[in-house]
Every structure is written in structure tokens, then in C-alpha cells.
Length: 165
Image (cartoon, rainbow, N blue to C red; front, side, top):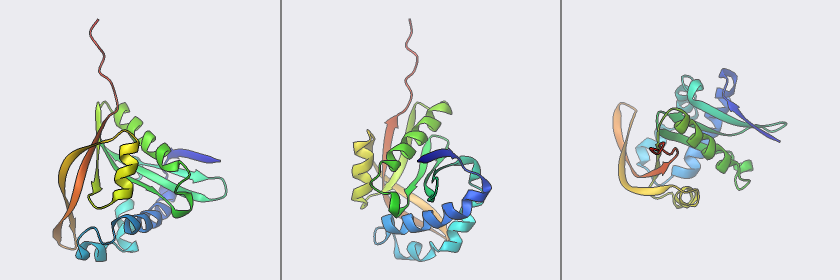
């Protein structure tokens, strides 16, 4: 049994650990080496402390944290599922929750960035109804400099505007 719920402060250390693992699984060799070196467990723990309000977690009754999604405005910013839960459909549930949160915030369209070389993630988003909207040179500030990761911007309509009568 999996429960999807808003994160609590006590969830964030596990979120940081899962995020670190998942980020390296999906980005190693696809982003600048210097950026990869800066993505340490400590860096992820520092990044999660102020992200409680925009994080939704998936937890198992006996398995603990299985995955999470972070939403910021109209961006589904992070979607990660732990190795043991990959291929179970959990990513679809978390992505759908992210889409719902974007729509509930009043946005008609959601967007996300995916590293251009991450073919597995790109197939997942396309299968989930997201559309490749083109190049997105995603800027990341870390280690006192700005890195540019080659990404693709994906979009999806998440709410329909009311039609005039």
C-alpha cells in the first residue's frame, strides 16, 4: 500500500537521500562533470530543508519513502522514484499529482525540464502526454559558478479554460 501525501519536515532527510541517488542515476555523464561532482549527499540535504511546502511524497507502509515530486509554480520541478519502486507505476502517480497541483494553483499548462540525453525520462514523459517544446539551456548555480545543462522543455495542458456559453 502506497500513500501519497504532503511532505513533513521529518521526510526531508529521506527525500534528500533519494534525490541524490536518483539525480545521479539520471544525470551521470549527461551534465557537466563539474556539476556532477558538486551534487553530493550534503548538497542535497542542504537543498531540501526549505522545500517541504512544495514536496509531495509517496510512502509505503513498511518501505518508507518510495518517491517524491516537487512543484514550484507551473513547473513540475522534480520527480524521483527510488530504485526499488521503479517500474511499479509510482512515477505515473507522482507525475499526475504534480500536474494536479499545477492546475490547482490556477495554471493551464505545466512544464518541466529533462536532461536532453536522458532518453528513459523523455520516453516516460512523452508516454504520459507531455510534449517536447524544444531546447532549454537550464542554468544551475552551484559551487560559485553557473552551469548550463542541455535540457529539453516539456509541456502539458493540465487545466481547460471554461468555454463561453
